[in-house]
Length: 213
Image 1 (cartoon, rainbow, N blue to C red):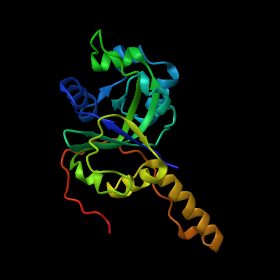
Image 2: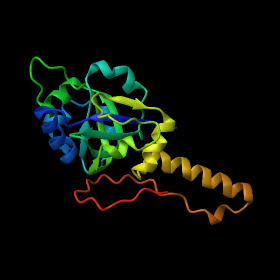
Image 3: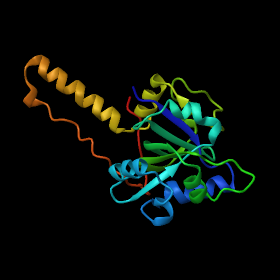
Image 4: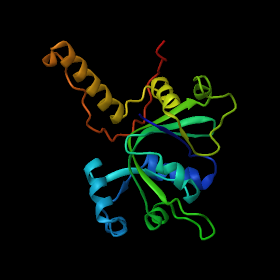
């Protein structure tokens, strides 16, 4: 089942700079200064998900270690700040790397490092009002996502529907259900599997959207 992560991203000047640099922008992790800090297994996984060698990244500090361990590839991430939903995406590769985090986000000496690094797939830059989040069952008015938290599968499904997200894990689950149903009725050739290719693109122009009723 898919989980979701609500991540604050725009609370102060430093956080806004991180957001502009590695969510709106991207990082070339094949550059020697980045690659030299990556373990071979992490580099290989990043290349498999981001074959261009560039990816969007985010990450919380070490006090969130336990909550991050609940997540896995394909979890939905909703970035919020400034009374808006600023971006949506899907967790690609999640790993711990203090040195890489400090390089990407230029941490001050007296600040904690954002050690729980994760790449983000299918990034969409948005300007949805935070009230859109409040209108979803399971969420409350006045919730400005001041702190990071993992959302349980039931509420994650509501987020996915409300914001029209299409994470690869959800597609894969749908694919499996379609194939199983087709086999049950004896017509497997009538089912076209859902495409599960990652699209690692930032959409700068957001079209008007309507919630499905």
